[in-house]
Image 1: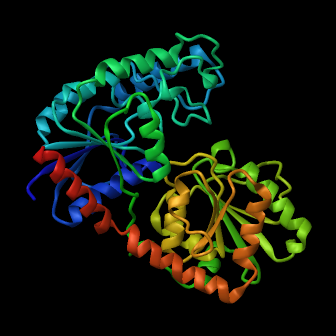
Image 2 (image 1 turned 120 degrees about the vertical axis):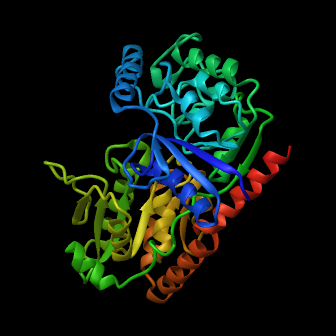
Image 3 (image 1 turned 30 degrees about the horizontal axis):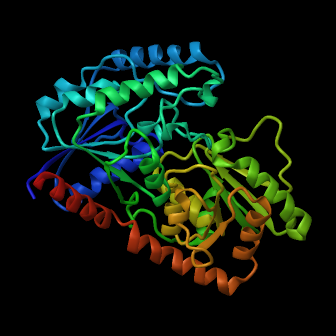
Length: 413
């Protein structure tokens, strides 16, 4: 296939959304597709990743968009108006791809109105909900994106014509004639996209995020624990994400409640907690168990060692488009416990490679952790099933071939 694919992403390897986009790019290259990335901020040394503009102009746009958000409300979660013009269309025209794969394009990388200037077929791989909301990245249970936004709870707004309605209307106007196909990484994310007013009638496909199963793979547990200075005689419960303990969406407060229950049930001398993505606070939280804070883990090798060192990974997010920590953990042979009713439900098969607890039910979350850990023979089966699921579902080549099939269909129509 001689098709030239261009991926647009705010970052190439910094953060989970960027890593997902970069892996799509890597997968396509691996099977011989002409693939390039155009990014706002480049971190990798990959020559097929191109920085779109100088850092000063992108930084100024980012600050200006941030001011608009802060003026409307000083306490909102991440909210992106994407208002200021950019020079991306000219750069895309220079590269002249056959098809464009949009990824996470916020942080003022891409103005909403720019998409219509590309005049190319577009695929949008969803890393969060921003593309079909009035500006929020996760709706936090609000369903107003299914109509026209406004009265935005994240903006603490009681007005119909607020910032969220303005952003939503800009999207409606700018995107009405796009040749756009949506790719969601999970069934949950696909259902949200289909329910949105902005994407009504568009084709929505599900292709899970991939990973390199030769980078993320099982290794010796004792050696991993030695490298991280973790105890050999405890069962280790792993939790991690960017801003792991500070982002409510990642569910650390729910994990705290589950750990308290486990402590009351007599697990206090058997379990210790390992946390990455956050540093130890000045005033440590009483979790009922000793906690080891690994700080920020930026590279695949460090993440792999953390997964291998653990007996179970907990990903208690209350909203999640996919959940790459869970798939990475499975690839390393470590079972995972999650809540249902998010994208994580696609990754963890209940009582086959982990445990899927009822959404928000901390008692069931505690039960799931105990169920994974309490039987050594069962734990060994869960480990084998975890690795098998990753190899059969999340390998780069598998995802890449799914994208190629979709690209071929789009370009034939």
